Figure 1: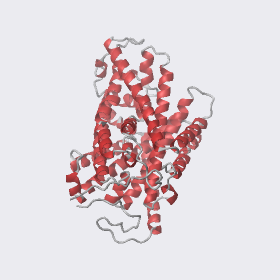
Figure 2: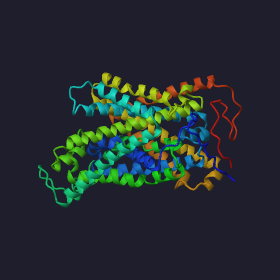
Figure 3: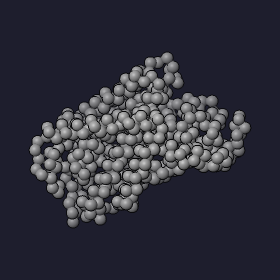
Figure 4: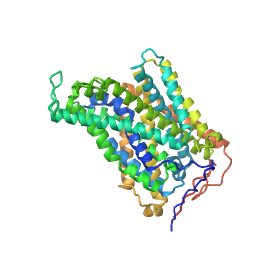
Length: 488
């Protein structure tokens, strides 16, 4: 008989545990905010120009695959409530090396994504303050996010709640405006009539053929970066057994509404060939609708979207460092919590690294080029993390059949679907080699893994000798005790 291990309920002055302060509405909006990436607002114009109307299927396919990744993560997190994040179950099921690689890679993912967001914030701040130095908005943003996150976990939830609401309202307004323009047969200044038939009347759904369709994956995958963020909030959710399944199960509906409907609305009003890759199609649709303030409003939405992503990065990276430090594979000071139950040392370190965005803007003055480079690296590393989640699930099914049988939240498709998802990610990596800009990032990314291998070997030499690994024992590398789990 397998009984779930419930985490100790920390008291108000217990600074050894992350506090469970995030309510259901926080978790739901954090999940929605993670599903609506900055790439949807900033990159949709380029993806439409590459793939045409078939970009709708690109977003649907990526969202479909990531739903199963999230279901695998959900079953694993709920199989043992002492798992604080996917670092814990990766280390427990695959070995300490997997926890090390997952934790540090995910930390680096969010640092890279945060740098991209800082670059975006600097670029969009120029709309209102054209004479302002590019580094000034970056510094102000990082300082503000650090100050807010140092206060309480609940404040992070509140910030994300309202950031996500802004994105939701913007997309609902866009879809509603698009539906209205189609219903009244709106005619643009160029003589184009808003009609759903615009989706297939100009070269069909696949105007650039299969190669154009495949090219859309290269940028679209970054739009989903952060969808797994709900997994890093598990240790700080008040009722994870209720809130995590609800947040994960709603992913398909979010993908359909926020991605598919918004893209359909855009391309029904503006034929895909008329969409300029370098401009936001969100802005263009509102301009066509006769809203003179559209550019300023959408600029604000995109800026807050980037700030939301950076805020998520500050939160998640500090929690990753906390988990790594608890396992002895990061400096011990990162495992210490402030009087408010916040991993303040990790927050300060991550925010310091985010300031690398200001340095990158000095090295690469072209903000678009810098943004493309870092977002591609980020997408590759996210796929690596998602793949380790799937591999952890496969190991879980092999090692803990009793826990799977007792689970009330089983992953549909099981191991077979994990294989399909892994093959999908491998295919996207191959596609990244087709374009020059993404190929450069693909060539540079292995340097991170070389650095990780060297760091892991160093940590193993520094770690105390442990007993040989066994079921539930610490691993032979001595990288800390695995999370206590149920055994069949």
